[in-house]
Image 1 (tube, rainbow, N blue to C red):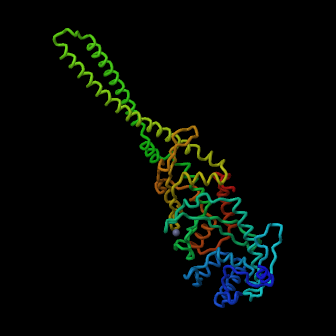
Image 2 (cartoon, rainbow, N blue to C red; image 1 turned 45 degrees about the vertical axis):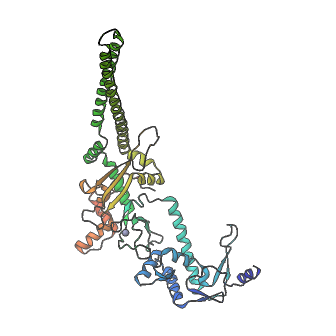
Image 3 (cartoon, protein in one colour; image 1 turned 90 degrees about the horizontal axis):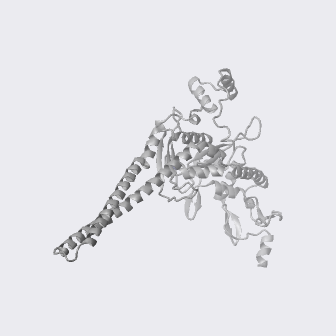
Length: 449
Ligand SMILES: [Zn+2]
């Protein structure tokens, strides 16, 4: 052990997985030239002002760079590149105390191996990485993608994931506001599954449209018809009538039984036809018993059906309550509760793959309303107890969220139609001039996060 310690302190290779760009010869690192060129390229690409991990990945993909992994060629992914950029081994150093407790300073030891990038380049990249890691942590804490996994990729069908784009404001320094989107998790070519669909959907827009649509469902006749059919109240009434009728029949049979029983008791043993009469009455009573058993069985079946329908009526009321109070309840939730609420209520959201002229984004929302049987907060809910309803958005009016034209869209339109490049400030002035200014957000509180 002492020998190994000594070796480490002297800057020798300490063992473990060999970093990309190196091989081991006589238990020491030596540069693997072809890989080292890619390492150097990645550092140089990332050090550029507007470069991102994703951008570097895309560049490598576009230019056909791959790496060997477990005997197969595979694409570079952002996690691999992040780990590479964070490893000081490439500028000739080892980290000491990397996993030590916070109060112990991280220190670097000069290795005896040949560096691949210069110390200046590594420092520059390291600074940028520190900034990014800080930003990523801030987002994680404050922000949650509400519909992650629920919005489905129109091509491969997998649940879409969060993506954020940020860009440096070159005129005023700092960063522009981050734009959050939903994007296919298999986008690009560096994961096990490849999906060619690269469009990302603005989260603010999709979230706002879904919020609006849920607020509207309760008033849709197609929805109400389906809900009534699912929890049929007429059927409940029919069964209740039938049950009354059966009770009446049972009552009649019971009294008939006691009437015959009485006759049986009053028979005179000395009568000539005593035996034949006795048998006759007894047969009658037997047949009444048979009828009664049949009626009682029927009553059990119907009682069962009624209780199920009554539960259904409660479940229907529950679903109506969810929808009627949706906006009130939802607005008071924190972002984690909102996400959970959506994940429980929505099976999937399908989006249009292309940008449409009518600006619609959401094609349909499939709801899976929980069927809750009692309203004392006790849930008797099985996974299959769901009322599924697919809202076809083409059949209803457009949401405000989708119809809202962004400045980028207006710019694009003017460019296309008139070949003019216009400034956002100019659009704002025109809007103000024609009274289109500051359209009141229908719920400014909701997306404040
Ligand atoms: Zn996809």
